[in-house]
Length: 327
Ligand code: UDP
Ligand code: MG
Image (cartoon, rainbow, N blue to C red):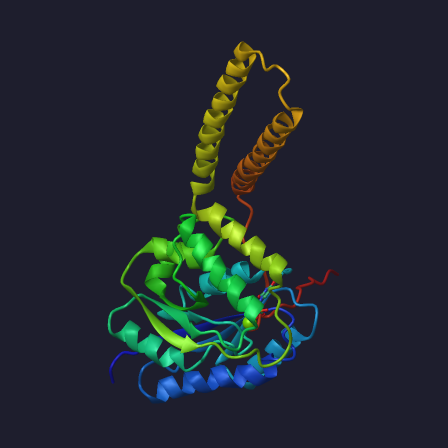
């Protein structure tokens, strides 16, 4: 029998008690189908990463793990956000499998695209990006903000695959190199392309969330976008320098004009124009300081080298405490 790769599907879950019981069997079925098609090994697994959920998510994962050996789970010690949850799962999987596919647990990303992903891997690709071909089921607002996000990201120098979220296949080999990227501020979809290796994209249609609510309100999306840009690019700092040069020149122009006015004797210059200039420059200075501050803040966080995730429990380990009995 030919050797077959072991696949781990990595699924971050945060307060997903409403969807997990529905989508978990779909993931298991996908593993079975791929195995029956002779593409992957039976030692493949569905790995849930509980991201410090406050509902019954972890209990559900533990029950699933008891039902079928293909289900396994790890639990983070607290909520750390989607990116860190995916990272925790990928790092856990890295040494135990040949390929990982990360996917959200809400059924929005088409599970059937996994077949094509695995085919591409068997064809020699090490990274396969899942790309949304349509977003018709997303609301107009979500679609526009999300697509705008990719455009702004690329314009600001953070290379990301358009309309690709965190649904992707990564080989264990690429992950082992990725593990050397030790930064704390992580933005996976911008970082994975930096590792290199042969990659490709497969296209799928994004469906509606099966149940529960999105955990990515506008506030979190903006935070993710900002984090992505400042983690991957120093272009904003360059732009600020450019703005600084531009407004210095404008200021010089104003100064020359003022001197000419004085020489001509028109000394009663309007205070309004001065006020405008002051306000404009004040605004730009504050903005610039803010952006530079963001980078300094990031440097500060990076220098701490805090762990990016902490796993408190695993479904396949005995988590009991060992009290040693004394006489
Ligand atoms: N998620 C997570 N930690 C968080 C927020 C979200 O692990 O702090 C998971 C969530 O369970 C889901 C995925 O990340 O599997 C994507 O979240 P969601 O579906 O809410 O985002 P959207 O698809 O609306 O962008
Ligand atoms: Mg979703």
